[in-house]
Image (cartoon, rainbow, N blue to C red):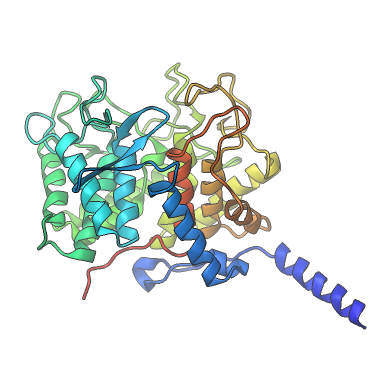
Length: 420
């Protein structure tokens, strides 16, 4: 009898393990609630809280941290493998800090970025130089903005305003409005840095501003961020930002391969490939890893495109599962074939099973309902961000994406509503 019960319990456990995790049908804007996928998997809340704390500390305070304080009031996040400070990482740091209710970290990162990266006057007023040296001096090839930085800056500042108010040392709302007011003044500019970072006509984010920059980056598209702006930016353009959210979702439909779920790093606004002859452009590479997680965020917060997003989550997870869930590589042509050229990183040219991509594919479980989705979550839970066999190690990009994925799947990447 005991043996029979043991066998039955094992069968039940196998049956549960084979069941897919089911999507929710409403988003956080409507419900104020967020999935804790790890809890659905059977992990205890104590385990989840400790894991999230550990991953956060790895990025901000551990021996391989990417967060560095300067004196008592400034701090930056560094892409260590490139030995610079990027608006990508700085704005990610702001979003993470406000999500974790760490005003001390938020304010220090903001002050460093405002002091060294943001242009306070001139034709690029309000925009941030996308890359600086760690001493704050600007890299000569990076005086202008990369548009995703501004996107995250504005949204993070609005959340900071909602969470902490604007009566302290930093008026977060005023800082967000300054960025956007300066951008709107550039709406009709002719030079590369005197145009809005949103293409006003297309209602789509640019790769970099400027009329001669007629393309975008799928990983820059976070439609739910515009819905945050529509609610709390207070610029009188709420309808426009909601239109941007709608256009961004429709753009992603055009940009993603229906059979594989893969997208290129860059493409035209109509979703067609650039065919620019460069190694970065038409293939699924490092920028592209972010798209599964970005779509998960839009599903979690807005759930306004749920049928398409559920299909997307299933398609991309199935593609990578069929590549080998423990062995899939991190660069592809969008039709699923391997690229002729490998994009190097950190001085290494190699296809690898990257923890950053492992993380974002796990986050896609928020919108997927296929039979393998819990396996992606398990791989994230058991992941470690450590050097690969060839010595390559990315505490910055892999580390940040991994932290974001743990936030998503623990229900801790949330819309921050105004405090009552």
